[in-house]
Image 1 (cartoon, rainbow, N blue to C red):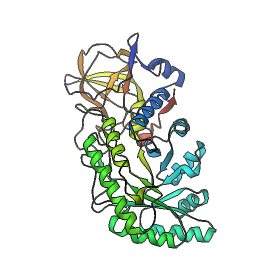
Image 2: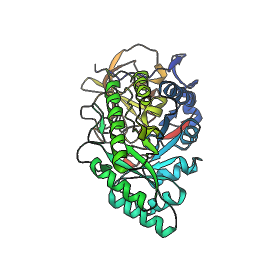
Image 3: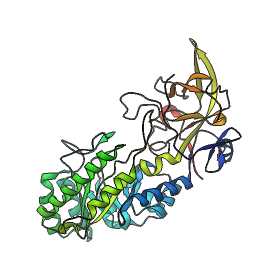
Length: 408
């Protein structure tokens, strides 16, 4: 049997069934009216962010990366829990506004911003994290045309990356940000042109579980901010230190020690040079904030045996949970945390492969893992589904449509 990933802490069984935020999985499905269903726990979100704040330095702002989960009720809840929102498109910007987020708390990063997106950001007073000199010129021209002052920061492509990260966003040739050596000249230019200078956005990578790697990257990021601020010849009002905090998905993964990361960052903040004495710092997190709070529930619609192997066929699949299928940047496919929700505390009885309803061999949600004996009608739970699930999967593939979502 192949091992399954670790189920996040905080889940239990009542009458043998998985409970999410105090509700049995089957009751939540009945309330929603159907499966597949994403369920996000309000309590888990609140508690997780509270623990993060306790670990981090006082005064460090926490920003939410909307791309991790843009579900409206989640955004509304996050507006009570975090200090800022980072968006990656005009669509995400509109979602944040619809959820009641103040434009002053929004920053906009991402290559390939359209002129209409830049104009909307400038109109609302959103901070634009510039990805290139060309984008800077377009933003300045639009602001001048519309008689407004653009709020501009520079996304820096650092000379380093986040070691052990699942997705490297900095170091070497990248479509993201301005190469570090070109940043000071661009900063001086946009300040001279009358823009509101907002500082640096330095994001080196994502999904790291090593505290040492994150501590090292944050230290290098602060060193880089010191150097670039000095070379720019202007005070640095704000510095986004990026994120990179990972969550355990796969067998053998261990949770990130955020206390160790926070302790090191506190020590660094007590010894900042004068040029950063007035700088406001933030970290930008997505999956770390919301990933563990979500569960994807899908119903078994068929049980079959092929060449002696058991297949549990569900009404869900990779069109909702692309990452769990191993098709979202994973080099070697490993099993996510998966369980039979309606037999949550039952012992392992058989080896089975859980597949979705799509007509492709890629649609595999658990590969040859150990489960209780499950039948048609049982619910399957895929954990760590709060981030990069519903919005990061091809919901229209083969015409099955999107899953339902619920915040409880």
